[in-house]
Image (cartoon, rainbow, N blue to C red; front, side, top):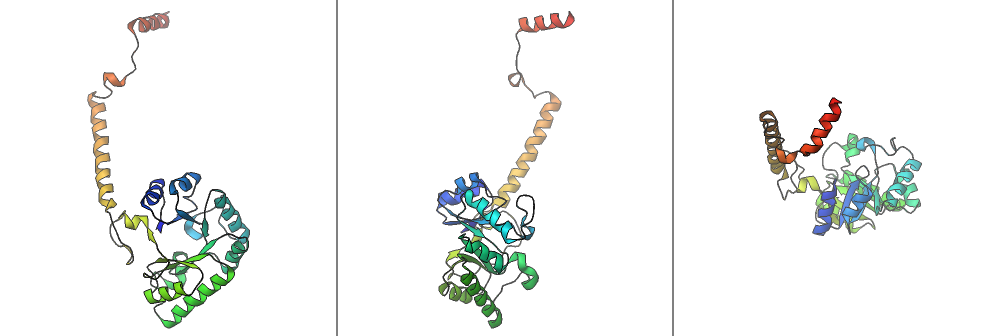
Length: 250
């Protein structure tokens, strides 16, 4: 499973044989659905800092329903929702396949901080109870983020939901990474669970250097008169130009 944000990433995931894609609502469109091809697409419903839908933040179950059905019409296969249990239940009751989120939830970090969740017996039990509650209200699956591998395996084997593991060990039902980590978009710190297969950051830096060089060469050509050259210009015949000048003078 990959989190993608661009048409090129979605198309590459489809061509490579990736099974599942996570695409935030702000990036999802008919063109993105087409690019994703055979991939099963989870559409993220806007929440908190992730933006708005139809010009406003989602606050009520009706707001979330409207957004989910909007993305369903574009071809979404399931819908990520990190809202309250009661809102998630309304979505499930309306037969929408909902993916929840447990463990390290970035929009809930006031309660946990950015750290692994479930390293104590008490926290592991809290995760298990939350998973069972999500299962009971009808969630289709849940992202299981940054939890101990043994806890992730136990949960995945003992729930009817599909557990999408991000830093949750090999026992999860899917292995989920961000395309930007797989492709090495950035330098510096990366999560423990991330694995980088390419170094796009170096290529982006090279391309930026080439952009600047090309722009400087364009400036130099304009200043020297090398651009535009005759073959860049639209010609007019001598006869037509002479007639134009005669008419101007008249």
